[in-house]
Length: 274
Figure (tube, rainbow, N blue to C red):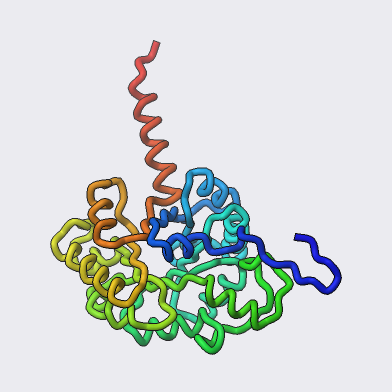
C-alpha cells in the first residue's frame, strides 16, 4: 500500500495470522511440516496444496535461522501461517525467529506451568511478557506503525504453542492450559508414545487417555488443541477431530516426497521389460 505524506502504511490482510483466525472460529487448521527442504519455494508449494500453515522444524534439522526466515517471509506473502518449532526453551530462540518472520512458535517438551509461563514471557511484549521490542518486522509486512501498535498487534497475532511430549506434561495439561498467553496445547504423538514405551502406537489406550485429558484441559481454559505425528489414518484423525482437535499436522515435505517416490518406483519396477 503506498504511503502519503504523514500517513502510515498499514499491513494488508496478507499479514494477518490466518491460522489464528481459523482457530478462533473453531475451524480446522491443516499444517505441513518442513523438515529438509530449504528454499522459500516450499511455502508456495504448501499454499498450492491448500495447507493453512507450515511448521519449520528447527529442533531436529540443520536448517539455519536465515533459511527459516526466508521461508517464513514467503509463507506470509501467500496467506500461509509460518510457525517455527524452536530447538529449546531459550528465550532468544523464540524471540529471534519471531523477529525474523514467524507468526508462531511451537515450544517442545513443555512439562509444567512454570515452563509455559517462561515461554509466554519470551514471546509476548509487556505487559503480557518481556519480549524485546525490535520495531517493525516482516510478520507485519514492515508497516510503518508506532511501537505501541506494533507490540499490540504482535501480541494479538502471535501463536504460542506448548508441546506436550511426556507423561508428566499430560499430568500438568490443565495447569499449562491455564497459563495466560498460551494459545494451544499440542501433543507430539511420536515423542509422547516413545516416552510411554509404546512408540508409534497412537491408538493405544494410554495414548487415547492422553489425548482425552489434553482435550479436557484445552476446552476448560478456552485453548486450542493440536496433534502431530498421526498420519495416513483418516478414521483415527476423525476421532481426534470429534475430540476437539483443530490443528492437525498432515505430514512433512520428506514424508510426501518419500511416499510418492516409492509409489512411482514400485509401479515402474513392475513394468515388464521389452
